[in-house]
Length: 175
Image (cartoon, helix red, strand yellow):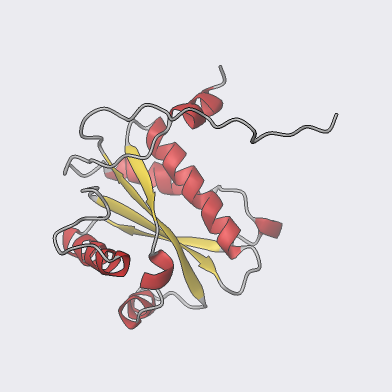
């Protein structure tokens, strides 16, 4: 079987990570894969923020927890030590789609390197808050950006889950 298709079939969302930080080289490869995601009209209407600083990661986790309505102490990033936030340009008609394709590339790249990942939502709500608009400004980011998702990345703690049975009735053909 083709290696890429095999990776697509084997990749799973991971909900328990070891605290060990992935190597910088692995994270750079994952980010590079995100940069090569397909995008509308070649506009590359998505960007990433790589967070490996534990204090910044924990602040983001807590903001995400509050938005999600979970009790204090819950970690919506499931212990993943590295978070790659993907944002889409509001000024690009394909920004949300471009960012979604970046997320897919990030998760497949992580899997191909023996790392686990999961797409965590609520980035949209986070980056509407003044604290995260300020973060973008502090990073020198200009423009109008919308949070697409967080790719939580790390070493899997335990076994990857088995795949769910694929539902029938999702493919139709006109031949």
